[in-house]
Length: 300
Ligand code: OGA
Ligand code: MN
Image (cartoon, rainbow, N blue to C red; front, side):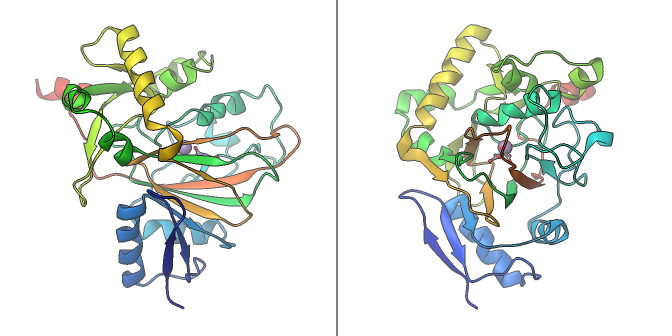
């Protein structure tokens, strides 16, 4: 079986055939997939009927995995999946559809806003790997936007203006946009803001990209309303249709994306009557991108 990758969109996203993710990969396959990620930023693998252990094994080929701590309001006791999974389903621990007013569900609705996974962590993630175990029969597409193309399309004055800007990211900033704003003291502490550059350079390709997310709530040194208005303009620019690939899920699709160079969002579906069981593993990034407030405090 030879691996074969074909473009799914004019500028990014590729479909991968000729690989079975139930079995261990060879180093050659892993290298080929990493190269393909650098080029396509989003890879789609159809027909991969994997279980949780197989998803973990596949994901670990690309680095250490993030633990799902500090990324939701779901308590450890209420978790349905293992600690290395982000549960982006509409199911509770009992595998039943969550009630309409369920607090976990309200918080998770933030995934409907354009974002990059874990930009709210001091060390943001590298890849996300999402397995569609049960997909919605209609709706529930996941859309991806190519932040390299979005950056390249900016005019020179804007590129110069944003080159060294640093944004404050927090899950509380994205949730504020959908009116979720009540937290315990413990949650506030775990969601405290981190700093991220607005422009990133890919370590392998050297291509620059916009590092945007709804988690970005302000720009360091800017008045908040001005920062929010500007970030909103940039997200609008970056998510024009020409930069967007919309993934229509089939059962057992696995989609892998580079959080350093893309944003994504899920579209609505009938979450009250239809089961959508999606499980995400997340490959951690290499290190902080800019000095974090507490690190600065520690040295100075
Ligand atoms: C994610 C996410 C999108 C979806 O897994 O990171 O944002 O389609 N989910 O559920
Ligand atoms: Mn996400």
